[in-house]
Amino acid sequence: MFSYTTYKDQTNEPHFLDACHLCRKPLGNNSDIFMYRGNTHFCSKDCRQEQIKFDANKEKGWKLSSSRRKSDPNKTPPLTKPYGQGLLL
Image (cartoon, rainbow, N blue to C red; front, side, top):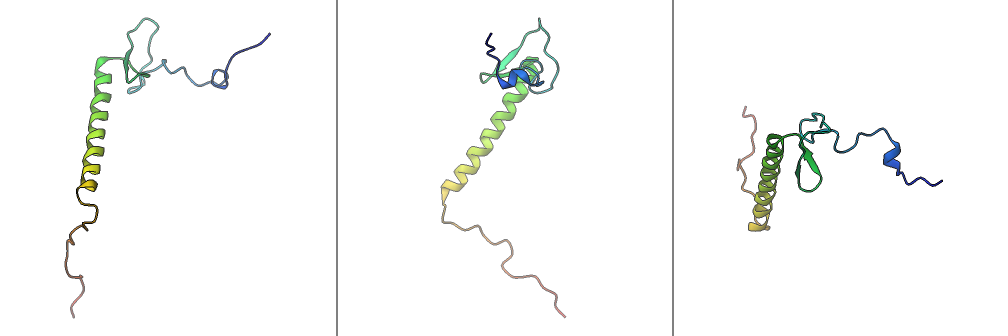
């Protein structure tokens, strides 16, 4: 008889719906599961909202840094100290 199990099925890794993606709280059989972006699962609306905020802030940071690079790629950053520091004797 043929078996259609995959390598992942044979390992002892937990199923992806066993625990909350953020707080790792176990997800019960009869508890609600809150999904985000397709396959990311959470135990509560609060955990899901925290991840949404985190992702939004991360994306804002990426957009900000890419807009800074696009503003003037040939511009060199200003020197903070025009003269070298040394010890006068």
